[in-house]
Length: 177
Image (cartoon, rainbow, N blue to C red; front, top):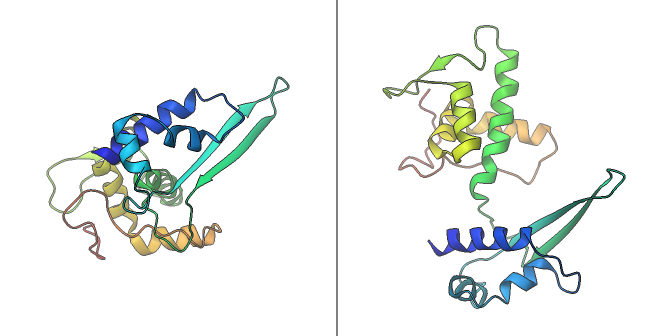
C-alpha cells in the first residue's frame, strides 16, 4: 500500500514541480507526507530506486528530456511494475502483424479460462486501467523466451521480463496457451 501511495504521490508532485534548484526527486523525498517520509527515511529497506524523466517542449516544438536518478544501481534488481506492459503490448502487436490468421480483433481464451477477449480488448484494458490480467494474456500468447529474445534483438540486453503480474503462477516458465 505504501509503495503505491508513494508512487502516486511522487507522480502527482513531480507533474507540478518547478524549482530548478533541487532535483524533483530530492524535493519529493523531503516531503512531510507520512507515507513518503516513511519510505524516504529507509530507502535501503524499501529498495528505493527512482528514475524520472522531465519532458519539456520549447516554443519551437523541440523536446527537451532531462533525467533525474535516485539510488539507481544496475546491479540491484528493479521491479518496474506496470512499465512492463508497454513492451509486452508492442511485441504482441508485432507478432500479430506477422500472423496470417490472427489480427487485433481475434477473440481468444487462455487455457481453460472461460473469459474470452480480443487482443484489442486486452490492449485497451492494459492502457485504460493497467490490467494485469490483460497483460498476462499477452504474456501467455508470446511466452517468456519469445518476449526476452525480442527485447534482446531490439537492443534491450539488460532488460528481462521474468514473470506474469499478480497471479499465483507468476513465475511458472511454461505458458498456458
